[in-house]
Image 1 (spheres, one colour):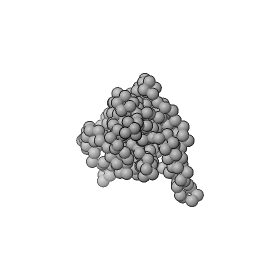
Image 2 (tube, helix red, strand yellow; image 1 turned 90 degrees about the vertical axis):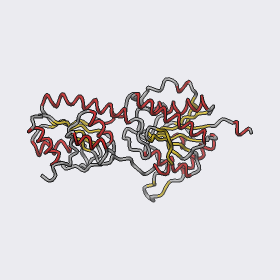
Image 3 (spheres, rainbow, N blue to C red; image 1 turned 120 degrees about the vertical axis):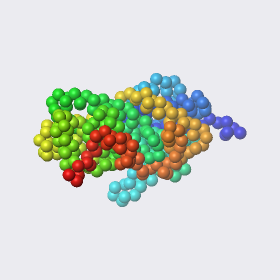
Image 4 (cartoon, rainbow, N blue to C red; image 1 turned 30 degrees about the vertical axis):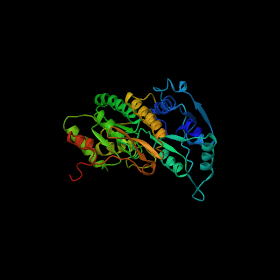
Length: 351
């Protein structure tokens, strides 16, 4: 009976790239775990590195107050990958996973909540296979984590990118130029698609829809013929382009070469990942965090919390790792955008 009444101990870590909403998620997990379930909560510093090096702090409810609106993460993060292959022998280094298990057992943890993107979920699944209780929470501005309709961090990044597109409209119009703006997203085009539509982009290039530069130029030339003297091109960083230069630079140079129209490029970069989370991301991250604490209480381990058709649910981590959620070429937003004349760089190919 004593073991049943003993409060659960849980760990929380944030891994991979930072994004708005991490502190809201930490707060959601920690406050629910402490207030609702009487758990002890430990925060591991610098992602999986904290688990490896036994570097942690005990979190009280008061320490979790006032962090909802803050960007970044109070626990810090890193891209440490405990199961990364050793280059020479191409074998896994067993020492880091052993150290993680030692930390887990020494602290007497009942679960570790791993907040991160695809790489974090892949590692979390491997830890689950080692016998460690884990629950994942999906975050990334790329919105490409498999198994959930949306990740927190995405809405905040869309807001930043959209504002940038808005501002470029006035410069493009004043100088009658083609303005190219490159946004993040890795191999997924969600950020470019959403910010491009929200900002009124004329051409949106994403990795999932193969583009042809001649088609892009044709679209711009037709706009000029129709007395539209400027164009906004929103480019996802993951589109096909030569190494050694940005996607925006490649598209800009090609447009100028083929059309002789003046072009300018803007690469937003890390500004998309910083700052305070939007209200939507605060709410989503809080929901994910609170639900993760509930899952721990229910013993639903080896899973990732997810949003499916506006309902909180879980998905096995074994289904998440190694998969990407990409934009379908027939996504309703793409279909509707095409009907309004937005180009995805694949029109006019037969002209």
